[in-house]
Structure formats: structure tokens, C-alpha cells
Picture 1 (spheres, helix red, strand yellow):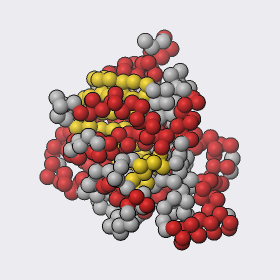
Picture 2 (cartoon, one colour; picture 1 turned 90 degrees about the vertical axis):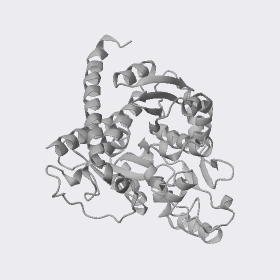
Picture 3 (spheres, rainbow, N blue to C red; picture 1 turned 120 degrees about the vertical axis):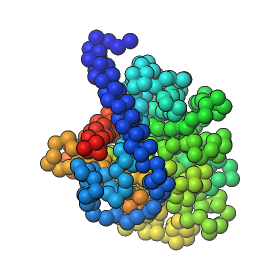
Length: 401
């Protein structure tokens, strides 16, 4: 039950839910009218970064709001609508006991939910699509065991994702998933449900959502075409290619595409959409783009040790290009324009551009208290919702003109 001072916010959320439903309807109509282009829209093509330019064929379309201006605008609208829906759900999961009410307010039927002390999850359904939403680190929630959560995050050493698959994952995150896997799996294995699945979450919730999606393919054998792209928001990387367990074969280069294909996704990195606000430091954790690790590699002694390790044992962990894990998925980069109040830009990056874009220098965090605070502000789940809702509304208005 909402307290008196939260009722206005609840009403506002209901109005936003109505707006969201209208967005979905417009998106579905646009998608149907462009069905003949679906295969081209879904194909993943690694491409070099290039200057953004406006699209003359789409009046009112500002190509600076999203990269790849040559791609169909309808696809952008569909992706923005879906991303906004996932961001909202990933935010609602933090609402504690009132989470089911928030989900229902957005038109979802809540099928099940649970808490473990380290995280929480919710299974919900709308329009023949079933969503599995995982909560990130919620330190202030009364159902959170802070000691347990801290210990799980600290278990950073990689362990096998599945025996026989040369992919490793963050041990603590795997254990967090293990704790509720038996509860959530029945909603995925449900033979009466013939629709598609979406997995999403903010922060560590997104990391766990990715592992669950991989388990759907590797353990449950769910058809790939029934799994929609995983949407994560400010999530740290938790997967990496395990060169040692690959038995020395040279068939796999260990790229992000390879990792996701080994997890059962033939589409590779396009199966994961990583949304990252520019100053959010959490998505850099355990990457070579981590500000602390990046600064350490510039020290002569540490740099020479890392070089020796790579020359002696080959690529992998603790090299200049890899700390512990690897980034997985296409990067959807959210950044506010300098000097323009409350107007975010969205750019899409693939391949090697992803790690380059995530690179952050330690000075960017330590130069001032405000800079350090900004890294925490950008990680807030509500800020992802605000940025994406702004872009989605603008996209729909532009494409309807």
C-alpha cells in the first residue's frame, strides 16, 4: 500500500504507463509495415565508428540521437520502446514490497517473484512476452543481507559457466543466480507458454539476466528465436572466454561475438544491448577500461609484469587488454550534451569500439568531488529511465510527422 506522500507519484506512474502502452502500439504498427526489412534490420554488421549525419529521408529525424543513421528509423523506434520498457521494469524491481503494484500499473501480469537476501527477481507477462527481471545491489532495501551481498560481489574469481563450454563467469554472480534458479526456471520451461522471453536488469541485475539467458540455451534448450535481446543498464561484465579450457584450438578468437555464440546465441553480440550512461563507473568494473586498472597499467613496473605475463602465457586475464572479464554485447551509449539542459544523446558502438568507448581515466573520477558524485548519479536506475523515456517520446513524435 502506498503511503499518502507517494500517491501523487503513483498517479504519475500510471499516466506514464498509459503513454508507454501507446508507444508500444505505434511501434508494433511501424514494425508490421516494415516486415520486409526485418532480416536486414536484425543482422549484426560490425562497422567502424564514423561521424554522425542526419537522414534526409526521414523528416524530423535527428540522427545525432542514435548512431547508424543509414538504418531504418522504424527499427530505432522499436528498440527505443523495448529498451524503455526494460528500463522501467529494471527500476520497478527496486520498489520492494510494492514491486508487483508497479508492474501491474504498466500493464504486466505478475506471475511470480522472490528475494534471496542478495537480490530479488520477478517474472511477468504482457502481450505474449514473458519478462524475467532481476534486481541489482539494493543496499538500503530491508530484505538485503549486506554482508551476504558484499561477499558475493567480492567473489570475483572466474569459474566455468558450464562444463565443456570455454566461457567463465564471475563466481559470486553465478552463486547469486543459483540461489533462485530453481524458482525462476519453471516460468521459462512452462510448456503452456508459446511466446518469447525477455531478460533484463539494472547493475548486477543485468549481469545476472545475461547468465540466465545463457542458461536458457545451454541448460534448458530454449529455442534461440524465442529469446529476445538481453537489455542491461549500467551492468558490470561477468563473462570471459576461457582460453585454457578451449584445449588449445585456434578456431575461436575469444571476442565478444565468440563468447555469446559459445553461450548458444548465433547472432553474437547483437543479442545483448548494453545501455550505459557516460559517467557510470560500474560497467567498467573488472574490465581493462576500469579507471584504477587503467592507471595501474601505466606504471612501469605493473605494465612490464602484465607484458611478461602475456608474452609467457598468452592472452587472457591480467594483460593490458583484459583485467578479469570482457565486455559482451553492443554498446548503447547515453550521454548528455554539454551546455544543453536535459537532452541525452544515444550512440551505438560495436566490436572493438565498445571497449574503447568505455575507457575512463582515473583523473575523470578524482578531479573533483562533483566528478566522483557524477559516477554514482549516472548509475541510478531512474536516470536510465528518464533518458530513455525522453528519447523514445522524441523518436515517436519525429517518425509520426
